[in-house]
Length: 260
Image (cartoon, rainbow, N blue to C red; front, top):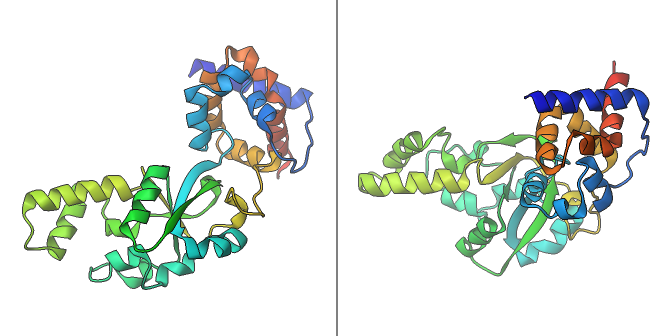
């Protein structure tokens, strides 16, 4: 906690000394390294990569979406549509067809896996030829919800009780194992469930893909300063190294100060 206080003191001091008005310019590799005051070596370090993938530095999570290949062109042009959740062939719709889950809770959802392997598993569960698309998503500013396949359960025991009602002939052990698997594989630790659509600008192979810009990252830092500072701190050699990349942070703080 003391280190975080030191980082904050440096950041706020720089906010009074520097101005980094770069509009919505894209952040390149060099600027990402500068954010944390890192070297090229530390950029390749496991902690920094993990924090980048989890959205703790730029605000963008690295996520994956599996779909039938016939949908790819449309998705890359127009994004992933939550309305597809209503399609009878949608995997979640098929799984929940004969359950107590209300139809309205299935509608208007987009599912994104936190691992490529998890997304590929989804592809194996459905028919046809499938492909997994990679996305960089600012989850912090989008509307998320619980995966309806959890039936509203907040833990494994709650889910087991709901599965017991749906499958009264299954043994307690099988029900428990099913509940544990579903909760771990489809819950928020593994899957991000969005309300509504996902814009194509977040899909890496889309012609509309746009990297995180300074304005977007600044907004993330403004709303989640502790999350950002905790993430870049371990990747830097010292507090002074954090200061070396503080121009962007100063930009964020200045924006915050200018808001009413």
